[in-house]
Image (cartoon, rainbow, N blue to C red; front, side, top):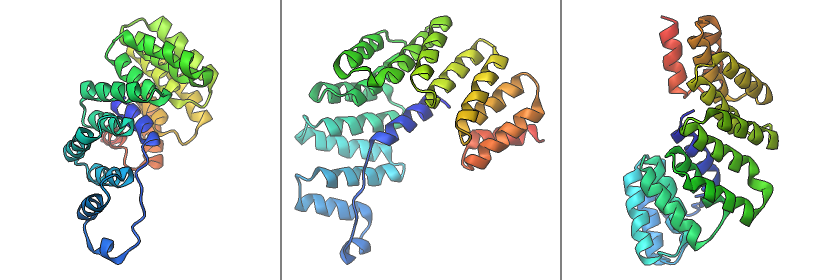
Amino acid sequence: MNFRTLIIIMFSVCLIYSCQVNNKEANEQTPESYWKEQIKLYPDSFLLKENLIQNYRDTGNFLKAIQITTLFLKTDSNNSKLWHIKGVLDFENEDTMQSSDAFRKAYLINPNAIDAIYLARILAYHKNAACLDVCNEIVIKFGNNYQKEVYLIKGIYFSAIKDYDTALALFDSSIHESYTYMDAYIQKATTLMSTDKYVDAIKVLSKATTVQNNFDDGYFYLGKCYEKINDHTAAIDAYRKTILINPDYTEATEALSRLEK
């Protein structure tokens, strides 16, 4: 699982954009025109703005979603939720610089662990040591309930700067905090893979898929590891399990097609 996927997975849990449309007129309109009309009638409704943004996001129109969010921010620049949404959209549009700026603004307006975690994680992948300060602030301000995320982010940073021993120890600490935290297994495995320790990575991923037997990313990375050690039979089996769990896993489908030729 790549950074984008990881971060897209963690960001999706925190965004809730839903509103029930219960009248005939709404059903006769496009979602976009409906939400725009409702916003004109109720310009102070944040929920309606969320739904318009989500309409663009659902159709993959991230640029339009970002544009409308930016427009809303011009008249509501102190709305931390809008800045949070912009951070998610910018990241999904692969603009991590704008994304980190948006999460930073969201956090400054309304200090909270979620925005701080997102900000720190982006900084970590960019090898920015400021992520360590953000992580320490998370623990100081919000307590030890976020230790698994803090250890993970610090591990990502040290892995990015190639201090692999420190990174692996931090991933172990993250897993110790929560043995069901799949992100930590993946980060530990991919760090081992980056140093060609594929057998060790297989052990980590095997444990992860035992803890969570529907862990599609775990099976996918198992497939990659088995390929590296030329165990194509095991790799094919791992890719098949990935696709069985998630039929839309394009990378696994492509890998399986390549091996089965």
